[in-house]
Picture 1 (cartoon, rainbow, N blue to C red):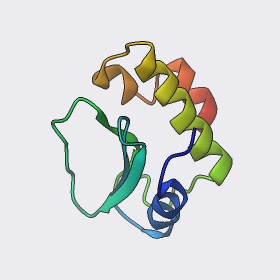
Picture 2 (cartoon, rainbow, N blue to C red):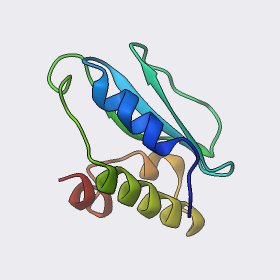
Picture 3 (tube, rainbow, N blue to C red):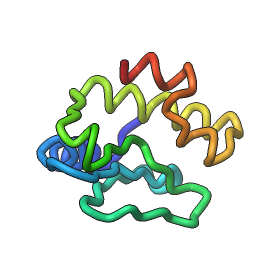
Picture 4 (cartoon, helix red, strand yellow):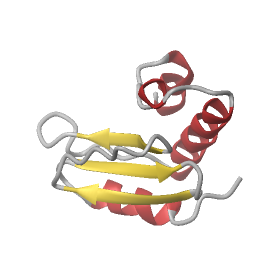
Length: 100
């Protein structure tokens, strides 16, 4: 299950020292990072894979395996019928164990 640009999005996310979000289009299987702004897409198939804030999490970094696994689990849950709000809840046990 390949997601285009996921590694590039992870690198941009990790290198940014502030607000950043990796988004995934679950239908198109494509990822991108938005920095500085807090953007919320209204498409049900575009989700926040992971994000960090400018205050407490500005230095958070994730390795390739964590991001790949998180994307895989979220896509599986999407295909099972999970709602967008559930998929973006990184405190959910399914996701929290991946990102530690």
